[in-house]
Each structure stands twice: as structure tokens, then as C-alpha cells.
Length: 185
Image (cartoon, rainbow, N blue to C red; front, side, top):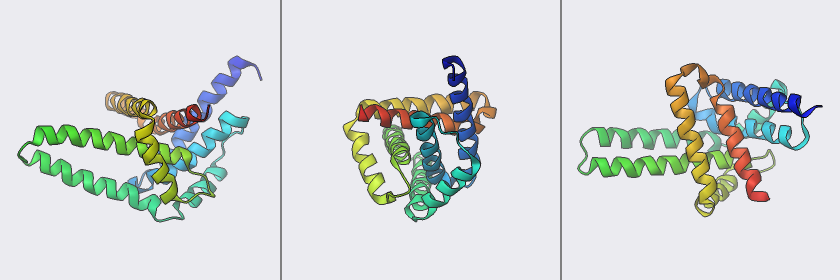
């Protein structure tokens, strides 16, 4: 395939994966499993130009949901984040400083989650994958910073043009896969 058409095909496949991840993330607690399934598809596209399919995504998504940590990690992040936001908005003494620290911690946790999703494969268990992703988030701070910047850019774009919420997850998955592939080189 010609290079100019391959790049357009890659864009279309990433946007398609973003749509699949978005639909599978409707229940927010399934977002980690959806991102993991999407990252396997994007990795397949990058490695051997394998076209993503809904059937393969569904199989990977079910496999990712097989371990309870795939649902408990996003749920725990939501609960703790909501309680912390309520505490800061409720007039917690030192709330401004605490809010800034919370923002940094949330960004680091989201970067670790994206790294974990990009590293997950059907033969790997979530506790080990997320443990390694947490360590990599700290050790490879440049890659983590890149993921945080990607999260912020996607959040700003979606805030300005909400229609992009449908394809935004694919862009975040692509960024996470790219950071993971960068580490291996």
C-alpha cells in the first residue's frame, strides 16, 4: 500500500478504535478494560497492519473484564476523586494547595492507567500489569509527562468541541501505545 494511503488508513483505524473504546466506556468503570482492548488493536495495527474489527475488540474487552481489578480500579479512582473534589470545594483548609496536589496525583494515576491499558494482553493479569505501569510512570517521567499532556489536550479539545468525545479515547490509546513502544526502542 502506498505510504500516503497507509497514513490515512492508520488515522481511520485509530478513529474507529476510539469509537469502540468510547462505546465500551459508556459505563465509566469499564474504561480501563475498553482502553486495554483498544490498545491491543492499535498495537496490532502498528505492528503488522492488522485491521481492527468489532468482533476482535469484543473478545479482547471480555478478556480484559475477566479480572475484577479492571472494574475496581476505575471505580476506586472515581470514588476517591469525587470525595477529594467535594472536600476541596467544601472549604477544606489549605484547599488550593490540596487541589493542586490532587490534580497532579490524578494526572499521574490517569497516566499509569493508560500505561497499564497499553501494556495489558489477554495472557497477563491486571494486578501485575498495573504494578509495572505504576513503576514505569515514575521511572519514565518523560513518557508520563507526554501522556499527561495528551490527556490535557484531549480534555481541552473535548471541552471546546464535545463531538470529539467519540474519537478522543482512540487518540489517548494511540498516545499510550506510542509511549510504550518508545520505551522498548
